[in-house]
Image (tube, rainbow, N blue to C red; front, side, top):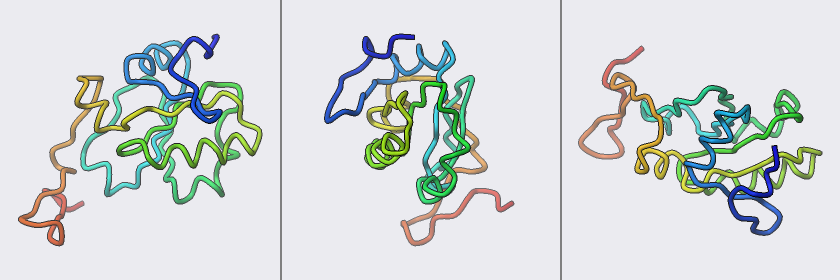
Length: 135
């Protein structure tokens, strides 16, 4: 698949919007969800191929990622993915893209998502957030 026709290239990194990402994902690309568990807040990308690996551990676990597939890096709002894309490129990964806007834009644009209400964080202020149901 020719990734050159997708998204925009900025500083050597290709950024794609949700609709483009979904097309790629439906054709064999893999979404790499870099969010920590607490930032998932019960919202999950509903796509065919997904690898969930925290941005905090990816530097020690990156060799588990496939080099022969397009990897679309996704996080909460799209800020962390850029740094991880640069890291992966420096380690020989060539088929790397960043999902613009992360899960926030993905959900806003009505892209496929699954919501687990039991995992949503609730509370009267940030310091009191907790899942609806403790596991």
